[in-house]
Image (cartoon, rainbow, N blue to C red; front, top):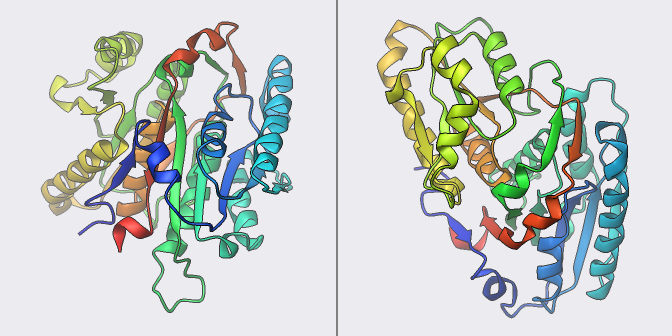
Length: 357
């Protein structure tokens, strides 16, 4: 039995019902200080739905990773976050950027800083809002909370609360984010491979999206996997989206890798639990068939939406898998990003607590 055999995915339509249920306990929302135009959408909806006090933690992110022209957007988002929390009677706690030399360690340090703040112990319901957080930050942050929620009840570190991961999803807006340059490949904090020695067989499962060809190619060159099983978003709101992603990656997939078409996997664009189940079955199948030859390593990487990225996170957490990542050198934004806001859609993944008791 896995942790999310019967998961709860709260859709846009059910969001108000979930967050207007009768209780007066305060809510803690953890948000990023990023520039993404969708950064305040979930909090805006929450503040206008619930009668509860909403406190917030603002996770500081390094400015030098963003283009100069989007930094005013990040400042405007921070001001709006403060305004929305104040309207509920809530308080904003800022978590300062930790000292770091290795950018790959930043997410792990941020997660440790949040745990040391002891804020988690003060709340029974927590939302990690990932719309304006990079994967390298929200993956270790969510993992740290999950580990405490799944610790034995008598453990001193056990947290018996309700964890939600919320995001404003919009695949078209994702395409408007500029990600330029590549940094060296590194495992995401908390998701490095455990154990010494090289595995006999390495299976690489990249969850593909738009605008990530250079980073996908770098991962392939550094991993040198024995087998590649790319994941495409399908079913998707735009039925041709998967075709466009295949065309964008055709050089790597069909000329360099010479991919077998039967290795292509599909994950529902709007349901990360579908991807979680699919990747879990894939892992079990490969381990069963290849383990007689020696150790098998299944390596995940995420290049698609934040919503599907949560499916990658949950799979790696559940099965102890490695997630490799190539971060962009800098982030920016196309000028037309605000034109795509009509397709914004809120999702809330309820991961621990009441639905699982």
